[in-house]
Image 1 (cartoon, rainbow, N blue to C red):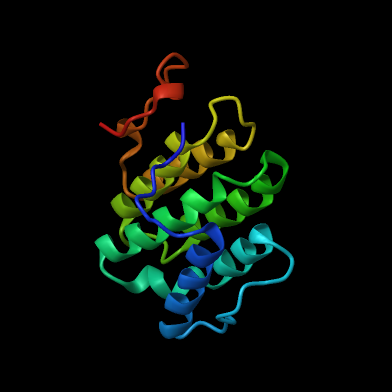
Image 2: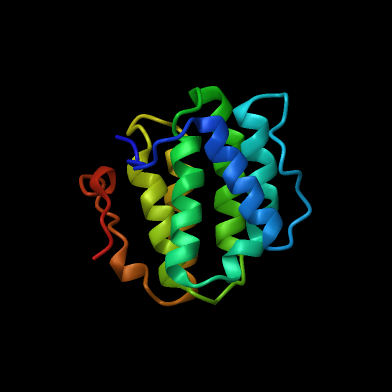
Length: 153
């Protein structure tokens, strides 16, 4: 399963637009795509995306879903480090603030991933960490039969 992105541009153009947006928000990032490929672009975008986490929820969700849609088209071996980095950022980002938004972003990532991807465990654990900060752990399924279909209640 992948997160649908209703955008009619190439992945490179999408990365470029993300870079421009994040730079306009004050991040120190080049607007030019890296010559190293999409995975290098995403590493730089994820590193600098803190600045957009201060926006309103809909804007943050839009930007993060764009990042997730690009992450999910990468080869599996290039995803792991980037997904771990994004999860760490969402767990630690303004800890205690906007937990429902951070849980939704992690849930979107979780659902977009291949059910057999080992890094999906990291996303699930990150979701639990955020849920514990706001006493929402009861909303996270822990029954092993429900976890693959994880939906926040």
